[in-house]
Length: 311
Ligand SMILES: Cc1cc2nc3c(=O)[nH]c(=O)nc-3n(C[C@H](O)[C@H](O)[C@H](O)COP(=O)(O)O)c2cc1C
Picture: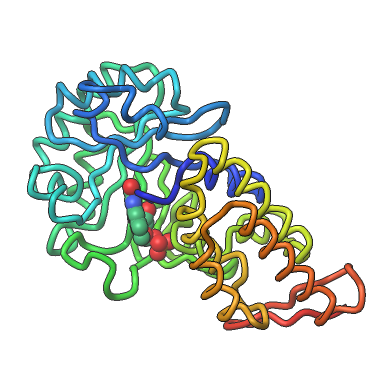
């Protein structure tokens, strides 16, 4: 997710059990013009991270893919982004209106790199055109396709469809869209026929969803606090003081469903020093543990909306 999935957050997701992740989408032109400017978006001492590129010119994407290849587990091409300024430049989701261009991009990137090349698509630009898009990506040599079950025009409205019939295509596929709970994972796999699921906003809401999916395990509150601190530490290593603002994106997820979370978040948004941030988080989690639970052996019991805590 652009603006969200930086190294610190990717690492948190991996520590909870995510089996692979993606960088934020990176402009192919920027990679060529000034690699230094985008360097911080590239994986560093991480494994299984795909580097996602966006752009409109086959040659530019191929050149950029070659440059970022050493950092990447594989290269992913964005043909899904609905953001206006990306579409205007014939990139992202606009490629779904111009399948000849998308094919050339896939072919050029494939011939430029040795690592696998995947494509992130939506089901169509305005209408469902999934079959044609899949066939063109496959013919062009893609090694895998991730499908977000909405059209570009839908942006993020409506429910994502998982009715994609992906098992009919002879290529590894992943399904994306509206995966928030473990039960969604199994439903999405069964309905879509995909081999893998991608969790996006669900990971922001609940970073340990990967632990629930992969290990059938919900972490203790103590562990969630520990992970927040680890996340903050990694964020500070990369961005120093600015981390105060960055962590605001994540606090709702870390405190979701906890008593007093709303008041705490309001306070958190006003914090202006890293030391205060650490102390406030420590205090909030500790008081939660003391007030809500008799022991530290905490099991979070999840129903559809909220969590209770019991000993
Ligand atoms: C803030 C935000 C940023 C996103 N950035 C990207 C991106 O850079 N590349 C990409 O392929 N998808 C991006 N997406 C789309 C997600 O990867 C995903 O396909 C979509 O949100 C549907 O999945 P979800 O319902 O699990 O969130 C972004 C989504 C959000 C909400």
